[in-house]
Image (cartoon, rainbow, N blue to C red; front, side, top):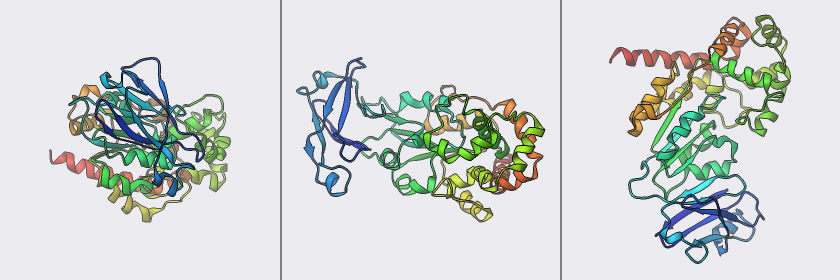
Length: 350
């Protein structure tokens, strides 16, 4: 999906909308002043680049909105343009001083996303979207490339390397937090052991395919039982366990979720982390949210984040005792060691 609103005079709105389907007729929804009813607009203006670059079959992806096709547009304080297929709001009209004029990417590293953190920031940004990993590459790229809106907040568990070009030239601030690698592994095993009986909205269809062998391995196992967990891990095929190998390092340096990472990648991962505006070692939720609030210029109490789970910490403690797991997380453990050491050094100078 490609989209842009590059002109909003109040009486007219100009832009383009390219849906994911090459031959799909581009249609989007317009909502004014929070109304329950929407106006469906079919794009009609020919844009040569859309056809020449193979983005759309006809190239008729441009539009101009006015009172003629959207009654009340010129007097509407609130205006939203959205994709009817996904519900993505790709444009919101901004009143002077209404939104924070920063473009922010929060890289999610936890398999269970900090949704409450993201949602607490939604009212402060003109363009907002979280869990962006559920979209395709082109849609994510477009979110990171938004030029004509100065207020942007996007968050998701993306592979940083694939989007580095767009992030570096268009994003003002980057936030990230890691945590104990054993805790993160415990979280992933917990989710995969229950996914066939309990629906988790944040698990994408792609992940269901990618982690199918992991899901089969832990399906129905009482992972709180040390003996059962040890037995499952010790008997697991190497290629299955490798899917859980050092996810933090992989997210920072790999271009594919199946790319293996090793100790040689740790220095590159550390270099990547050094370029973040806010970086936190994830020892407690308060530190991360306070740092984000200070960077954005908001009161700390506005940003919410759930504390870590004691039950998952107990599973993490079991995993610490299994030598195969330590080898599996080797790159992340070294990465996290350097992170903690750096954070402790910074605190000692306060």
